[in-house]
Amino acid sequence: MSENWRRAGWAGAAIGVIAAGAAAGVAVERITVGRGMRRKARLALDAAGDYGSLRGTEGTCRAEDATELYYEVDELPEDGKRRRLRRKAEPPATVVFCHGYCLAQDSWHFQRAALRGVVRSVYWDQRSHGRSGRGLAQADGEPLTMEQLGRDLKAVIDAAAPEGPLILVGHSMGGMTIMGFAEQYPDLVRDRVVGVALVGTSSGRLDEVTYGLPAAGMGAVRRILPGVLKALGSQVELVEKGRRATADLFAGMIKMYSFGSRDVDPGVARFAERLIEGTPIDVVAEFYPAFQTHDKTAALQQFAGIPVTVIAGDKDMITPPGHSVSIKDVLPAAELVVLESTGHLMMLERPETVTRLLTELLARTGAVPVPVATNVGVHGRSTAGSTAQPGTGS
Image (cartoon, rainbow, N blue to C red; front, side, top):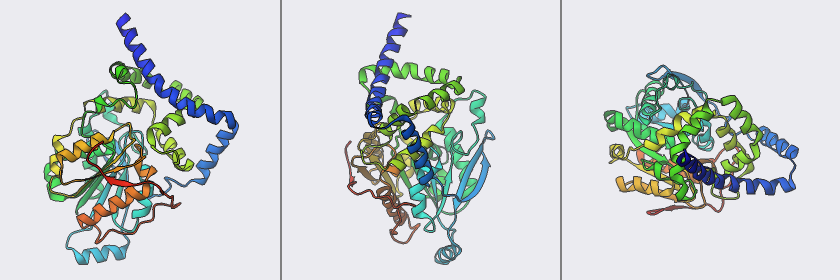
């Protein structure tokens, strides 16, 4: 019993480091801005920012366990379809966007705004996220696996992009989903996938990530955290009330782990907060163990010989840049770009740069004839001062 308490103490101290860092920023804000004013500011940002408002042609399909998966398709204009069909005998390429843990398809807002009318695109919500249904297998007690997410991706492709070349784009868990898909469907990858973008993701060794915490306490955190999350997941209503009551601290932690720069647009930061807040604690608990056992390094070999772009943030504490370097080691021909002063949600923090890298990938695959000039998003947010540099080290 004493050993368990000692471990819990280490874990509590380590987690406290995160809370203290976030609380310090919140405390400064509280000195100058009252709680009521902060609430009004959030409501104003929610009303003014139309992030996540873009919609396409809706569709649903069923995963192997009958979980309903929601997707949307942004089709090419009819004249664009005709031009491409005249140029090629096969249907136009489709870009499939896979979002990360505790997010939803709307996290690709800026890229979606930029690529509309340029290329056919599919955006989908992973099981238990966004508008997709709760995982039925998980409701029956089956552990979530990256293999299952890979099969979910296959179901979406079968329904929304059954023919033509594919370019797969995945952020964080979305990149791992793509790896799980490649491991199980190598023939489909060989026959149809012409390009891959892996954004802020990892092929394994996530059990070594410290999330910015002292390394000495991480062993205890990893041992008890799944059980703690499971316990919290059994008290959803109580936990969600607690999250609302500590909204300021929660927002500080989200900003700390999502972004690497101090000049993030407040509307974008609030948008990220809303996305993450939308993930119930029991879903967080269901998915977390899968990351600790994730290892899809061998599956990366399925992408050898096709254009691959790997994008990392140099201040990413969730999937540190060294994980992108490891992917590059397996795929030497891949383009690796490390973004300076950038955190985990790089497609929101550096939208122009990420969009440019994606359009350059599309050009290399032949999905678009040349790199296209894109609009960063509805508001045209500036990313002045950010740089994208090819990297070979973390």
